[in-house]
Length: 183
Ligand SMILES: Nc1nc2c(c(=O)[nH]1)N[C@H]1C(S)=C(S)[C@@H](COP(=O)(O)O)O[C@H]1N2
Ligand SMILES: [Mo]
Image (cartoon, rainbow, N blue to C red; front, side):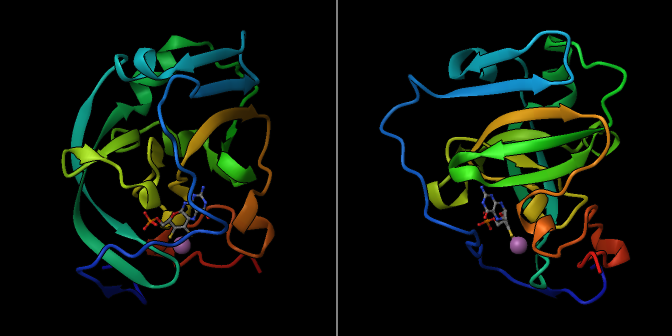
């Protein structure tokens, strides 16, 4: 366990704002923009056919709960990014979600085997509260970086704070280093 964390068996729900609900995924899109050679808009059916894997990982919330052996299925980040060209000047990504939530993640953090665009939990579609239809999963970082209800990735040159980072949380958020706050 990372320092300062306690174990929970539950799956707490934590977010700012309200839970979005979708009646269908017809109009759902995921937009890739910023420092890419050409902007892309992915539709649901297209996106989930880009690749698939299942992994079991531990998750750590900055409010000190950790949950072990959580099981997720999604599109591996590395299989996702081969479908567009990221410009060499890009170093970070701003993740954009429903209702304006954002979080910043470094490209070299995303470029790993354990990051994915997750859409199943324990083999079933995500619960609305946990990010249906799709969330980012970055298990190496505090769980606020695992943005729920994702709608876009903006590739950036340099880092910029997202929603919680502007509120004082750490830009990187490594639980093993206890990078909780930015000040
Ligand atoms: N869109 C969005 N994603 C979000 C948040 C949020 O407020 N909005 N909160 C983050 C925080 S602080 C945590 S701890 C996790 C909680 O995920 P869970 O509700 O599935 O446990 O979601 C993260 N993703
Ligand atoms: Mo959190």
